Figure (cartoon, rainbow, N blue to C red):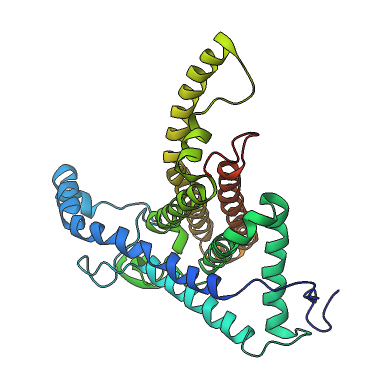
Length: 331
């Protein structure tokens, strides 16, 4: 049902509404890891720059370079101040979502309208979607994380498309005009620290959920134990085979944070560079050429948020799905 005048489906309460507090707390949790990951970068910045200059030579600084977005986030003001421009964007988005959620739920009504209607529609739609994928029991335990990760990634991606993000800041005047070398703001997910931080938070939650659902013995059995009913020599052979498969599974699990972080970072970073290239392709018409690519990046931002949420939820479902006969192994 569409709510009159808003175009947002009206939420009809058929059960208890998922609590907002875990989602708000998770927004704060996800905004913290980039600070810890970036602190080490600040200490290495000067040494890295000196090493590069010693290899390329002083003349390299005078050669014209192709204009584009740097692969790493830039620290604000100076290299010793490790708060980067991507961290600021992450904090702005997290604070905006928290304030909007508080505003939307400050006066809860049985028949929601306006901001409450939109927020409840978003949360309940995500809950029903995830419930159909990972089941009603697992979604009660993990919904706070998956909903938060989707909302945070989506609005961080879209915030990076706002005009001025990446184009306003400190720079220098060159042959082709003023060039911004240290942007004030940078897309949050175009920073590897942010995507890796979210992936590591998921990895920690995944371990906790796996141990809660399986126990230590059940967790090991899930990875290395033989599947299916066999006997005799074939059973011994299957034990060896599944033990080897378990080793490969452990390697795959350890690489999941890397694959999750690189996938999101690579797509968003490539999209921002594409917009930068299109806007400078034809002088004077860059704003017009970039418009179709803005709509493309809106879809990419939504797709990447959905992919990250789906992958993390499926990874959780796989470890919490019991083989027949193993469901009581941890009791």
